[in-house]
Image (cartoon, rainbow, N blue to C red; front, side, top):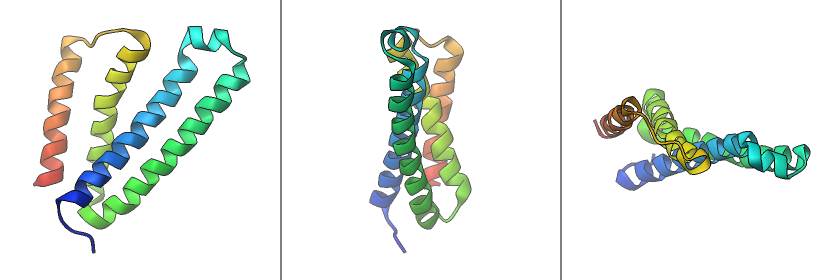
Length: 120
C-alpha cells in the first residue's frame, strides 16, 4: 500500500480542502446581503454545487486516508480538526467577526490534536 509522508500530507490537504469548500458553501448560502442581492434559487444552486464538490473531495480523502493511516480515527481527527480550524477563519472572512479567547485556545488544541493523531 501507500506509505510515507507525502501521501499523509496529500490526504490532509484533500480533507481540509473538502471541508473548507463545504463550509464556504454553507456560509455563502447563509450570508444575508449576498442572499438578498440574488434570487434565492441562484444562491441555493451555487452553494449546492460547491457542497457537492466538497463532499466528493472529502469522500476521496477518507477513502485514501483509511488505506494510508489504517485507522478511521486518524482520518476522523483530520476531518474534525479541519472543521475546527477552517470554520472560524471562513466565518471571519464572511462575517468579519473575530474569534473569542476560547476559540483561540480551541485552534491551538486542534492543531496539537491533528499533529499528534497524524504522526504518532
